[in-house]
Image: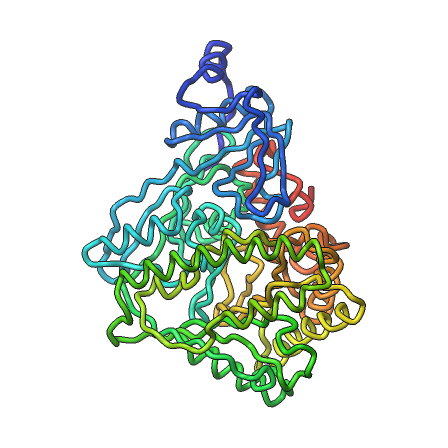
Length: 505
């Protein structure tokens, strides 16, 4: 479908500007946008809070009349500037676009559910749990307080090594383009355009809804352990195959490393926090009441942790002591059986800790040896900075494993759908000194040695030479996306500075 020309009369323009359905904040309300982490701020010309598809269409028409750009946001959990638009544009907050349609079952194809883009993860989990039969997402992110619009459009992922990104669970996308037309993209109708629409980066238009694959509710046996670091991250030739066997033997795997916990005793004293999930038919552990109490305690603990981090940032030299103390408070050796949503969203209150992070996706080689090198380089760099009296990484190093994505703009894209990618993330408290220097060094190492690609929702724009690097590595793929983008937004009203360089602007 080719977008039609825009032609709006003066009367219609006046109606759009005064339309009560297009809810907007006035200048008197000082409509400044700040994301959750506090690292992105903006002052758009208007902020809108639509509740229907028709209101989204009205906003697009008004943007055309007034010559404004459009970007979207929900709960502001993105660290990059993907939602940032200033006086030149409108910011559309989609949190009220939260309708969940009835799940549909098709014989031979399983279950799907259509959701508006503003639906939060927790709300979909709850709706699927109440359905008869109960349903669940095959894979999901840990945070359940964020919206699917941000998760899917930016190619976010969970930890399921036999599944790909959240975007690859999508079967259909509905997007309102620059002419105000609702377009439906599906893998069945046009797989190439669909691969651009699923991870659209908000550049094709305003996403109205996604249709997502779900499955009957299942249970996961969740095992936490703290093996020695050297067991999985010693000699690459020995440990690579061991790491690979463990990862591929699990339904999901997540690995954490906490800096400074061994108090400088040496690598042989270092440990990792290993989380493994496997499907099971065993009965669930504990009761719903116990689960609620656990979540309440976790929320309190995370709020306290954020306060401790804020104090620590005033005295950076105490970082190792603080982190060792927090590390000891974690129960890293336990096992339980939970329903899938409870197991996947294993930690409540993460949003209470103001943090920033950079994540890169690295394609694992045949024996995962390159993954060992990539991981150990972070630990080596932490020690280098510590010797200089600097502590830029003060929360954790984290790694998850997923299959390659088939979506054009995914940072985990690969022509081999069975390729395994390691997503390595470095997380620190917001406002930590030297983090950008640290992130630049480790990212450069990963890019130089493993052709790593950044996670779009996290911090990456500050990396020197990142756009030319990405154009060299994936320019042909980005150009394919750009050809599709121009079809639905020829004037670039949905374009912003975050992604302009990637697609050749």
